[in-house]
Image (cartoon, rainbow, N blue to C red; front, top):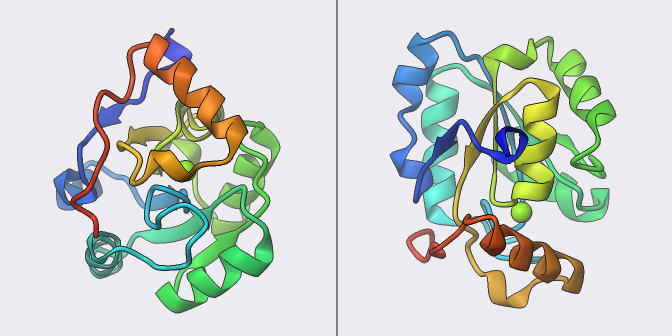
Length: 168
Ligand SMILES: [Mg+2]
């Protein structure tokens, strides 16, 4: 199941060594919204995520909110954070990964795709050639029914033994 395996697994965003990744040549970050930096369908960004974006900007990463959410939710969040936005990304399909990378003038191989879902963020990111990073979801209990089904599959495939509460 190589196509589903993230390249990096961390328990929190703070565990991701951005400085080391920057030194290795990574320049870009595509990051998911729901349950990665914000509780599902809320526009509240966790403190953990705010710290992460501050560090990533200081290290001169190009950052884009890359989400399947609609623009009316995603755009205000990205504006609030001062990062780019690519809503309705249709993860895991590759076409919008390529479009976002083109827009940001990044190669997939120098870009991290960070998210909480195997069958959207990670699968799509791997297929696009990004360096994928899996985080446990923030609040998996309040999700869309389709996502809940994917969570069952994630457990069957052995992912996500834990959930993340540290981000509050
Ligand atoms: Mg998510």
